[in-house]
Image (cartoon, rainbow, N blue to C red; front, side):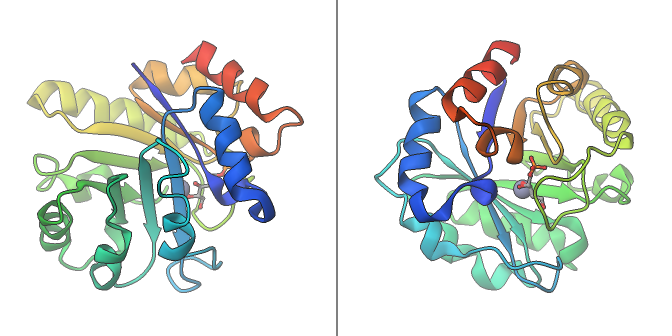
Length: 216
Ligand code: DX5
Ligand code: ZN
């Protein structure tokens, strides 16, 4: 079954615990944790301390999206009993194979993210090792941006490669997802859907989660 991962980047941080409870009670599956360092992306979000403040407050697993330089240096900080995935950017990793092995050695599933302009071919020799591929459908750094259409083609190509070679990684999409385009991306092969502003910007957050879940 496809899963919904609301991104807390668009949550009201003054009541983060409460907002996470809202999405959990409405049936969201995973919490997407966007970590930005002001170097790899032109924005700073929050770090492991904020994520860890949610440990035990929710049963949802964490899907950590590291938009940072030198991710190897910080991987351990994001390992908790609830961490399901740690995803690093291909563009931030000189030794991607080593970084993927490092994540797996910590007992966490390893994801690799691709910016909109980065080719799938850059992952040719690592696809057999990864647990997830995150296709960015916006340039990372900010919530609330418009979906970049070429991401759809990329998902479809990745899904074809996955089937042809028998890989079992999960395909995730992140950026500009809303009720109007979510079905198109899951039809193309996406199994884990990130949604930030379309969930936390809704007037009725639980109702919005339920609307997504009906489509998924
Ligand atoms: C973008 C982040 C996304 C972002 C998505 O840099 O990686 O996870 O929060 O937000 P929306 O869904 O508003 O595009
Ligand atoms: Zn993200």
